[in-house]
Image (cartoon, rainbow, N blue to C red; front, side, top):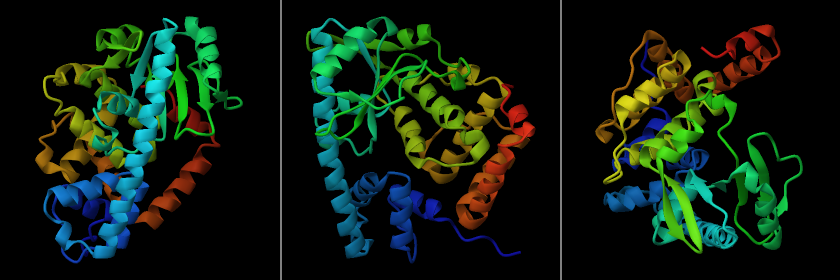
Length: 328
């Protein structure tokens, strides 16, 4: 049986490691980079590794334009974040940050951030809802209809800003209690800002949040989808100077069956796509190996992946789906 050709995802990972594959299909590689929101990072890695000369000039020019556009967007997002945090702290309100908002807050210059972000995730206390809404209204923000739920005050927009504001109260139940409110406080620190302070999570909490969000909240374990941006975040979080991740505590957190599978899948895929990253091996199981092979097969046979997803959508209408969703 002939071996399947490497996928666009695998070719992209080679480029992100500074190794341009032989006879690269740049249209396919760039399409994959756009799908995974890593176009700016791809451009920077090719330039930094000295491999830009091996890239088709038109492809390189396109990637440069994507990176430039992302710098403009991130500059707008950072200014937007600073404006909101300044207004909140001026009213004596404490805000915490999650995901891409942390990268932008900590960066001296938005141009240093290659990560692409949709929105800004801010955490506030439910007791502050009225005051937070007054501040956002005073800044000209409006709430998206029906965006409020038990976990969030809602999502807010304004015509002249680059992204929405997602105001969170707590971690959704889909995380199945993997992150408690107490741990969010223990694994974060207050950083002076404006008239008050902003709560910033450490690398350990950000890594656990990343794993829980991608594999549990977004159901990555079940769907087989790959979000390369989250994998790269995991690698970078493990390399934060002076802010080590406690892997024993991570594995303890992900000790239940579904958590452990999620951790195993991410560890396996990182070690497959980025073997030089030195990422921990993580748990090992037959189920994890099988699901990992499924993810690789999906990336190499996208048409088959599409058919499988249609079957899953049909499965969601059955009682068997309800059984699958039970915590284990």
